[in-house]
Length: 263
Ligand code: MLT
Image (cartoon, rainbow, N blue to C red):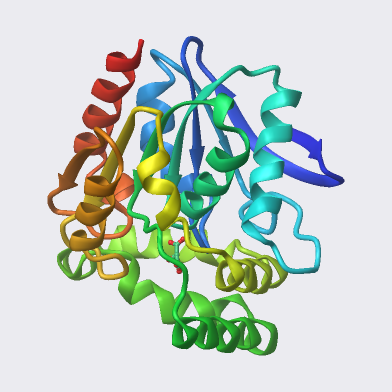
């Protein structure tokens, strides 16, 4: 489906009925990373999964995509779909967006799932490498960014044993527009730290991390879970940064249990 949200055409799915769950993908990806979850969870819940602006099948305006711009898109999409409070699931950059969403639209979050993500801001070095990568996207196109990021996206064992999944993730990345890549990279570099928010999170929270995540070490997920009152932590075996695809059955079972516990 397509909706015009904040003057931008966003592509999304809205499937199933019951407790709404909003799946927010990371960078430079699309809702395709949630396909196994959309299929499994929409049997029991209402699942809304957008392609963020600049990603997947959504429109890609020029400019810096600050995390609050993405969060405003999500809020406007929920309004357009007449959707009440959601269980918000944010993968990586989707988690950075979820922190901003939670800060400003607290009442719209019934539960929070922080999925292969972190609360801290970028270091100065991290910001500089984001800018380099943004310029590389503008100069050389999406493929250059995809090739640079691909080796870190999946656990080492997934990369060596599942060429089909490697090819699928490459295709997902290549669908991201150059504007989307540059805009999101600059937006992530500018994001503030959300570490101060963690002890104030009152929504039931689940932290999920892949044991083989090469981008966000599990120790970071563990520390984040400790900082959030009553958060649960689940580590996904046989998975890296894209646990939703690498070990979909374990992720589906964990999400389903969490959603049922909130019902
Ligand atoms: C993502 O998956 O969204 C990115 O790897 C996050 C990041 O680069 O910080």
